Image (tube, rainbow, N blue to C red):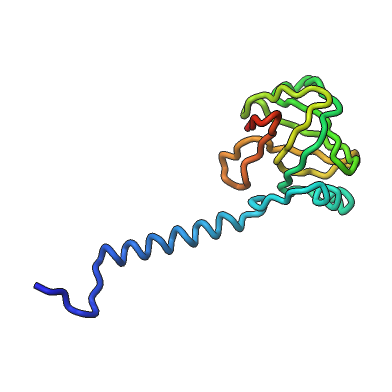
Length: 148
């Protein structure tokens, strides 16, 4: 028996509704602050001078100092890096969540994470996967290997 014109299949209707829901959810998730990543040294420099925090950044530079964990901060690996504009940034990598990074002085690294302003140049935190999905995943890349 042929289908009557004007009636659509329930499967087609459900499919269209499902696609619309996925589009709206994807758009909403991408609108969450911290989802956008701002690559480049200029973004960190602007945030530093404007005293801004909570900006997802992606920068590269040279490790100038590794820092031993202090009491109560054993779960974090910290090192200082110099960006191409000369700015010093502290990187705080939570190695209980992500693999430790075998950085040494003079290594070249690329870091993605959440920039927090400090008087000394700033800190990049959140260099690991974000299980809450509130921001893009952070990472540290050293010699072609990504640690997250």
